[in-house]
Length: 185
Image (tube, rainbow, N blue to C red; front, side, top):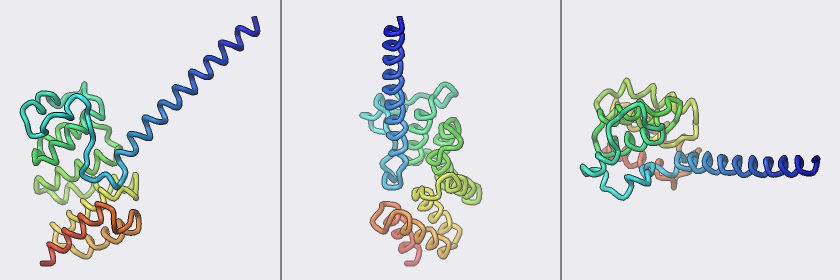
């Protein structure tokens, strides 16, 4: 009887280990999407990904913003709507996503800024950076916000921070450096 119990216990421990490893892989995969080097690559959704994100078919696939969406689904739709210039609609989705996710906070800031409300966007970037000071996507968009407020020195400060955190070859550095150069010319 003890031998059978140990066998069951052993199988249970193995099953728990596999489950834990799978969960850890999922968390790592989700975390990798939020790494600073992925700026503007965006999240993926297997059902809707093959469709053109500006198409009616994509919008039908994504559906309407509603509380039944998972956090990932809400972020996926909100991100791509924001990147395609549908800022108000993007906010409907992003506000359904987890509120303490640096990606969500960053893109709420992005969409809010693009709607012309730079002052309201700043706290979202600040909250994202309070959660993860190394999240260079938020720093790049914060730098762009400073430029739109006529504060190039603050934008340059964010560029320096990005350089320290991910180097001058990362996408966020190049993007913000280009915006600063365009601002000066």
